[in-house]
Length: 377
Image (cartoon, rainbow, N blue to C red; front, side, top):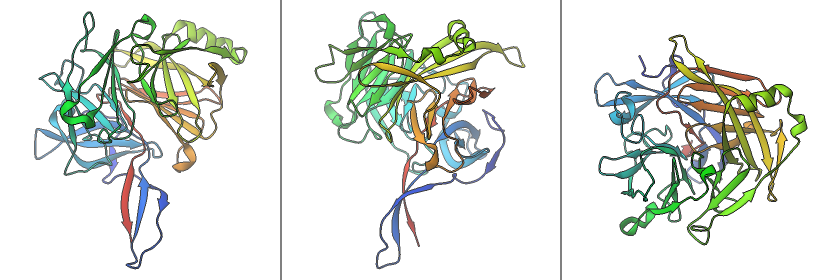
């Protein structure tokens, strides 16, 4: 029985892979094709029958209904729900681009691809980052999330960001190896203390939405390290919000999230509204009541919208992302897929319908599409 159960795994292989590019046939009648896995959620880790210290991965592809069992071993520190580290449950503090960040007992942070179903089954990659340094009057034990400027920390220009609850934001270049170190930034404005960080490829900066969504702060390792760029948002089309949505907005716990589309170049601000509810065991859990999406422009205008076209947005404890639904048959457009420690489901933006279920998830991460090199006969 799996540790975290959505429904029983029904397959023994990785889910559908979608061809996005192929090269011409060579003289040997083989071609090298670049394929992508669909976005997937890390549902659970099943105990391994032949070793207590490892488990096997269960995922749910975004374009499939059932859970897929992946014959990939996962280290025990990521699969045992009883093992707690000072950063959080399961020894994970966040995920970005399929890489999971875990704390080490000596104060360092390790990036690893063990939970990435597209990564090597037999030779997982582990990249150690330097020991964290806590700024005065800050803390580095509670983390909001992790962000990365590129798809792999092995890339020379990749910057990893860890946003902590409170004033501290820490940036690091993993590829710097021997002289790699954390650049610690003290954020002055308290409205950013509990917010999450995301990287904008368009702007080349790390963005953090302020609480309430009225400000966006931007940092980098250059001129905006000590003097962030601050943008004030002006909201439009609010008259299109129904009275019920306005009531939900004022009665729920609301968190703000930024996501950038690599295909359309658009940036969206999402207000995620949740309330505390009771489960069958009378345990309090958070349940989504509504989502509100705003399309941002470069001048700071935020337009409320119920139509994001062919896009699907993925919100979880990992860095958010969005992909075209048409790229992966079986996905539905104009939706937001949500995944947290106690809830999984989706929101239809056109109708406002929220379809979620409550459960317990110890690694609530969406993994974005991963490139796979394959050969076809």
